[in-house]
Length: 174
Image (cartoon, rainbow, N blue to C red):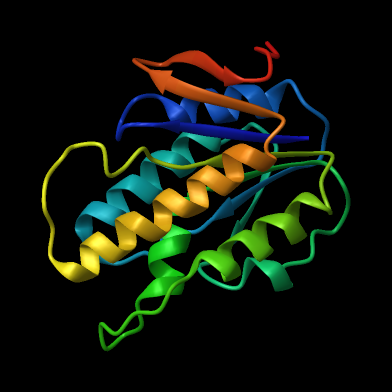
């Protein structure tokens, strides 16, 4: 079963995703796609590590190439987050970019095939109406296409607003 969680930044997606994982089958895997760089990302990673402590998650740091990841056994996986994975697949160290959609989607498909349940976290981007530089605009377009395809494939899609899941597809499981 594929569950997609979306919403704005800081809306409770991570907390809800972890609570959902706690109600689903073991083992539990947390696939962390955020590269640890800079103080802000290190603080966010530390906060997420604290949130997961004692919940039985095996953390797997994987910044690109999710399709080659092999889980030890079937269970529940939480992929956090598509935004970071997309950026990692899209931009290289020199700032050049290429469309990451096929690699990201192939990776999610490969991961889903290994899980009883896969929960994918992403952000709602592109709805603010602002104009961005071409690199950022290309990222927003790619992420929008990825999110739309994931929503199409997902069994359940929830938008989190103030920590409250709003069902966009499927039913509220818990």
